[in-house]
Image (cartoon, rainbow, N blue to C red; front, side, top):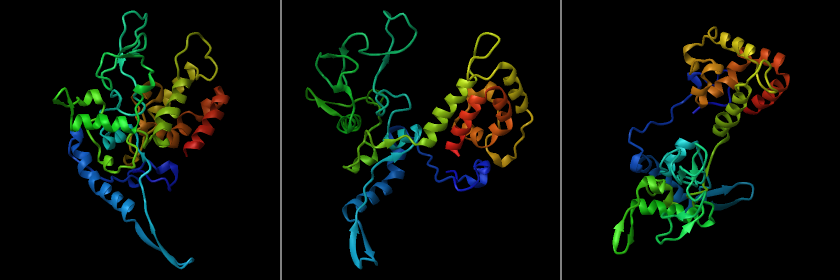
Length: 301
């Protein structure tokens, strides 16, 4: 956990970062989730059924306040752990992973397309007969009921033709019933939110700088693109930036190593490194991009 009530220049230091918990159990088969979430689920059940007695001194009366879990805000790896989803790119692992990828030889492309993209195909996950469906058939869209059914098929199985069969986790996109399934009102499909602090650095911020540093052909750089001669200056400055040991991840050249950066690298870039490394040359050579970056950076800080 990082503190946000301190100056942004020092947020990445060790003194302002706290380890909330460490669970050594494997996330496979949901062992870790059941252990560390059981007390939370039990408390939420009591808050929803029994509630908390509250006295209002202004109205001079008592009442019972009941609380319910509306959403879980977590980045993708944490969401997969809490919801027992199969993985970041797991088939139907959450409401963002709707389609199964497959190669098709009759398409002149090296890309991956969805099963049912070119022609209707059998969809065995929800239909046991020979019905063929397109990939965008609305009956294939997951919701709470279908997500609960998939998790139950993995953990408890389903009787088909007199035989109890369990669905493989990699097919269902989840390892079983998550602890939050005990909260009958919680939506197991749409109850998970992707927080801005994750989608921002890992999405908007990263793509902004990858666009400015994109490859180009010719002598002159296209609009909103940092020229190669300026990139050399940015790269040269990297070796002179030395950090104290309590600053977290050291700076690596954004021009050469941005592909290896994780979310923390992008946070440090917005908070600490970009003013020293790139602001002056960006303002001189790409003033429109510099203005846009100042607005984007302000939104993060």
